[in-house]
Length: 519
Image 1: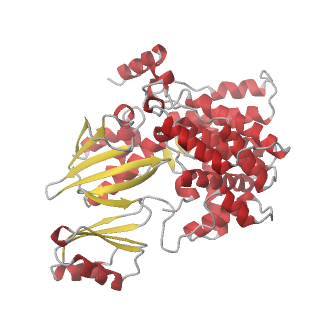
Image 2: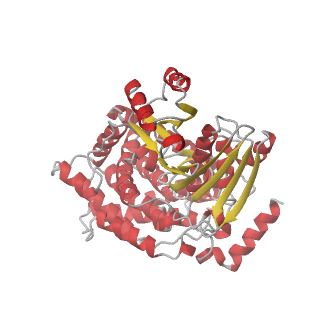
Image 3: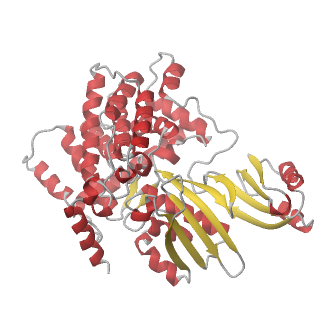
């Protein structure tokens, strides 16, 4: 699947502490619900004992998101914190077990779903930043990203003949046959479900015994017409051929081609993202509360000290620190945030862009253009690597956010694409090897400080690039180096809560205190 700025990088719009846990789990739950025609009575969830979810599924919101998805809720639903109770009220029985599955991916969900009529199994991955992939249904290998309308048909007769009949009846992006004979599963990927009359005809002929329809869960759909003009920084600069096209314009052209949108639509969608972010910043500064939380409301005190002149003069950076901390507090209180590129790193990019743009007296469209530029850099990261701390450590989250933010700030200053890319490269170089070690298994500390660090690093690297500092290592090579470092990291340092600050006496004591509150 080609990376989309709005699918993979700037989004989802969501509640919860972690996009890899909350938003991704919710999307997996929505697809599982569709697999059961909306009628789930029992769900058994299994996590690999050696994976990240074994230790983080409760504290980082996997269960909350998954249950919300099984109930058909959206990622912004204010009821999400109570989804476990709501599941029981809906008459759905749920169980969880840790097993020795040997799953290659640390964020693997294994679901067994049942009702009075049928039983199905589903295996899915949370791949980072809220993105998912269903990799098996009833033991049959598939690859579904939630980026199109999926019609699944269990075939009684000649599967290839059934597939040909479907292809004749509709303009599908793909008609895939999995298995053979009476065990065959046909998967139809398209911009709409297989028409009811075509399904009825196949049923009437005794060729199909069951049909399921899985709706898209991503905002930008894929099709055969989806394309992108470039997938790496080097390709983008070669494509631009020295014209010095603003990075945001290259980003708008990229996303328009990827999603079949007009460039005006792309800008408008990003302006709406800016407005969501600004509302969240205001909410955070005004004050937030949430019981299951390490850090209370602190950004309001920072705002007062800033207004009273009691802080060191750091220019626009002080406003950026205020906005970044406000957004992190909204995230930690289950408010609405934009995962950009993840929920754990949701504040560095949008908070810094809004703060610096306001200091420059720029408006929402300039902010949106800046976020688009950042989104394109993020698309290169997502294409070649990951945003999942469970795979790459926090260099994949706060590190990627700093990288993207640096390019965004150069764009605000009307810098060239070459300068923006140089700033991004220097910013990511500065944080290669950054580990993910959440205190008390919550995405608050040291995540708050890492988001502030990401903002500070980005602002410094942006000014360095604007003044002509040498990046030394091209961004594509830096991304590849970060990917290799992530593979070399012990799993304990990749968002499992089994290393670093996570296992300090203070962290363990905090975790026990928070656990006692909920019992």
